Image (tube, rainbow, N blue to C red; front, side):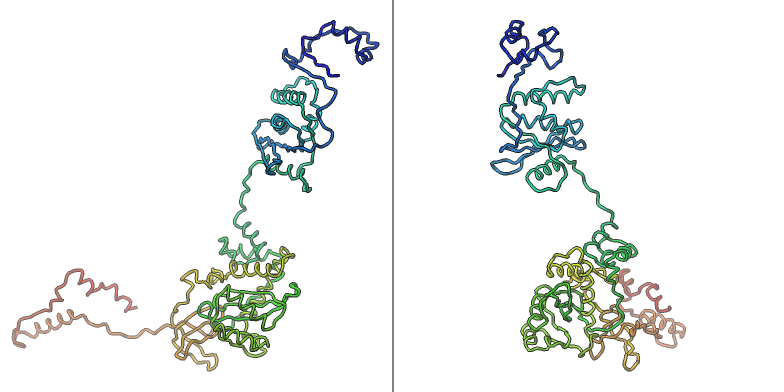
Length: 538
């Protein structure tokens, strides 16, 4: 039976009536020797307008409700009081964030009060604070004691009043925070945590640390790190040397040698097949490299027949372009009619090297080593990826990130002529020592120069020779007579005539050419200063 108590309405007659009619009250006061009096408590919550309704049925449910679920959270650093829920109609997450000064418990209690004010209907309340969950579960029909914190007392008073006058049921639930468990409850709690978390801008690591992180991902070489992050050579080499993967798959430097190269991109390519066992059935990796730019393309296939080679070249043509000349070894796939017919259709000249001599394919053989090295270095982070993805990552490192200290531009820049400075241009004349006759020839025009090789223009055509056989041509200083100026010659003749006297030759009018009497600007052009001819006397 509900009993509604209002301050100032209980009289002594009513108390006597209850003692006579209410059996429960009689048993409660049985054998009580004290005196019963009626007065209002001294607590400030009991003012003249306060009303308390004693209900026999609790509004708090002991089981979760099939209703809206509200997640609350708060943070002491950001002072955010968060309330979030998913709208049952639109299935979109809604939220309400308010800044509340005070401790995290006060901020989260403020979110609870807003939840009861916003949702008068049935709902589930989820919080990761055991303190707040305990307060909400005990707030119904409770009487507050004196609280020194004014803000906390106001929130508790409002919460007790809201729950005590509530008509619809609610359910309160405590969940653990910062868990990776699946499900709707964990997802909603993570969203509330994210909304309450303070916004922090993570500081970027320094340049050296950025280069180290990038190298752990791509494993580019030291020149590539210098170019991308503006490091010193020692810093870049320290990163590469300290990498366990790069130290494990280190390749010695390439000795000097001569392989005919193109003078522009898509002029001479080298193509070959290598085996990479970790790819399984697709272990046959076809590789093509541009001998001028060093740009590489590779594709994984299930075989090394002519059909696989043609498929690889079609893919390479779509990425790097069509070469003028293609050099391969003497493998059966490259000597087949199908392969030769394919190159003829595309207008590509086919050349083969010396049988059973891999030195003619030194550039692509070196590319095999570099490609396998990068694939092995990137294997720990790409274990579950298919061969096509692993090859794409390795080609990105080789074409876009790696470079050399001689040319601080990646191969893809050289290949597509990203800079006019990369175009081959004429160099000074050089003397050449013929490797066969050991005689000095020249001077010849130097076309291009690289590591271990050089290309010179001879009367019989271009010739590739080792760079150790090339020396700069310095012309010998020859004795040259400085031509006399016409005016100086005229002055000398005039002086000779004056010394000879008038009887030496009859007097005649002297007529000077008009160009002798020139303006100052013209005189500077005709008679340059003496500094211009000082180089003749060195």
